[in-house]
Length: 393
Image (cartoon, rainbow, N blue to C red; front, side, top):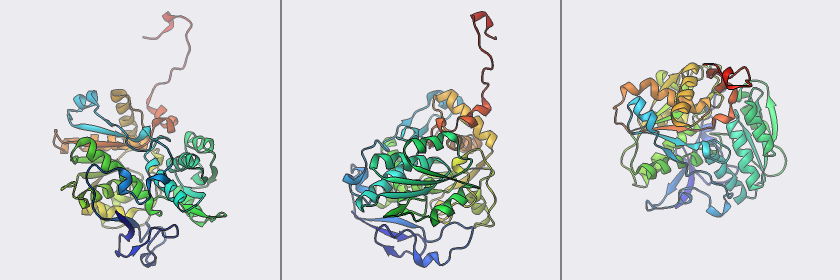
C-alpha cells in the first residue's frame, strides 16, 4: 500500500511528513472561530485481502508502534439490555478497555508511532481530558515527552491520570477552545509534533481502526452506529474507516452513523440543520469529552456525514446521566457521561428504527474518569452501621 495526505476540500495531495498538517491552499479560507479548513485525510493507494493486519491499512510501519494493547476491543452482546429494550441485535463497542481507558488511544498510538519514525521526542496536545491522558500514557510507553493544555475544570481523575504518566500539564482559563489556541501557539524546544485532534491528520486515521474491527467482529456492516460527538474526530474516524473498507472492496454499503450531541454542545447538529456553521455558542454540558464551542473537525465531519447518509441527535444532560445509570445497571459496563450519550441517543430514537436493526453503541471512555458526574444519579449511603439490624429496609 502507498499512503499520501489528500486535502478533503480541494483534493491536493501532500507527502506524509511531520511539517504537513493542513492544506495551505484551503487554510487561506480559515475564518476566526470556525472549524478548521483544509483538513487532510490519509489516502490509501493499492489493494489488500480481507485478512490483512490493521497495521497494513495505517501509514506507519508496525515496528514503530509502542508495545501496548490498543484496539481489538470487545464487542458486547448485552442480553439483559436487549430484552429490556426489545433490541435483539444491539451491541456495545467497548473502548474503555484501551490502556488509558478511552477511544483516544487509537489516535495517540498512531501519533506516537509516527513520532518515533521521524525521531521526534516531544508532543503537544490540547484536550478536555481524554486525549491528554491518552497521549500522556501512550507517550510514556513510547519514551516521548508530552506537553498538555487542558481547561481548568478538567475532571480531577483525568488530570491525575495525565500527571501519573509523567506529562507536563498546563491548566487554561476558559474552555477547550482556549486550550486549543494556546497549544497551537506553543512551540517548545527541539523536534516537536502537535497531536491536536483534527489538526493532526493522523488523529482521524488512528480512529478509523474501530470500523475495521466492527466489520470483522460482526462479519457485516451494522445498520446503525451511535457515536458521541464533540469536536467530531471520533465520528470522522468511524466514517473514514467505512470509506476505506468500501475503497478496498470489502463492503458495498455504509451504516447510518448517528452523531449524538449534548443539547448545550451541539454545533454539528445546528450545522446539519442550517447548512453551515454559524456564530459559536458556548458549550455547557457535564459530558466534558464532547463539550466544544467550535468543533475543530466540523467542516470535514459535516460533509462526510451528509455524503454517507448519517444524521445527528441531541440529548440532554439528564438523559445522558439516566442512560449512564441504565447502561451500568443492565450490562455492568460503567462509562463516562460522553460515552453514555450514545446510549441516550439510541433511547431517544429507537422507536423510529426497525426492532431487528443491527445497532452499535460506541463506548468511548471509562466511567472511572469522572466519578463526580456519575454520583449525581445514585444515592450514596450517608451512615455506617454496627449490626445488621441497623440496615434500612
